[in-house]
Length: 420
Image (tube, rainbow, N blue to C red; front, side):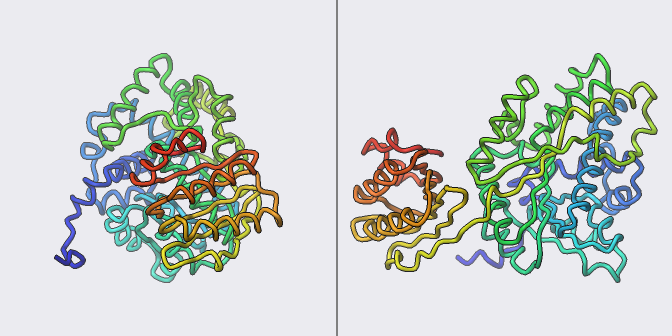
């Protein structure tokens, strides 16, 4: 049966991508700060306090709106100051596209297809017709490199990719894929990735203490429950999301995580970049003073590749049933394997590795197996040879059940580094 032409119910898209619902909540919180563009979008979407915030109390609403505006405004400043084409991922329903177009700046909004389908016509209608060509919206899967690449291939010049409120909903495996995708895109285009996500929990704790006072822990528990109820996605600890209980160690671990994916981060203290906020007009002088002090204690991260990527020629490796892509970044060789790595194809892979090793300093190999259908003992021996020659060894990731079972049966899962 051909399903390509079946009509898609918007509610089905929302159900399979439940984080979609939190985007409406954040839009209404921005509207709560009297942002005219956010109010206009919310009005066209028919959003109300009840259908986006539930039973949230006025103090909760003020606290969350202040935190949201701090993030939205500061991230906008950082993106604009980069001077690069803004790529907002996920763009949600916020009015950043309107603001950038008003200033004559290019904006690309990427999000889940469900969000784009609803947000694109509404936001575009609020942009001056003469400036609509500056703005584009596309539905993508952030963990799918090809979907992102297809959208960005036609964009000339460096990119500023921004993410807000995304990483807490991703597993470490999904975050790993996102990091790899962004590194590859930045290696091609140049630019940077700016995200508020690593220290988002620190921001929430410190800001809530300043605004909500001694009852802030009650607010935090309510907020976590509320996000969980709205999103249907487990809110758990993530390597790239810093836990305030041991912030310094968590920040180091997050930096190491990024380095494994060929990325480095610069912390940009929010208090040094935050512009004027409308929500502060609703706070007392004491609250504002404490909030300003809190903003000097957390940062948003500017992330860039460790070094320019070096694409490697793999044309002589390909066979009828095997192929790969390879790139080398700062001593890390990433192999994206496809098809069958068996007795016929393993010698080609070994020859490629040894030729590459002679010409470059390789200290680590990442074997991306998401498109690898099968691996034989000959293929495993090639990986073992690589393991012995690399200081940090070989890491195998994104295996299907067949490849995973072969590694377990042969005992190679205890010899090589394995990531699920």
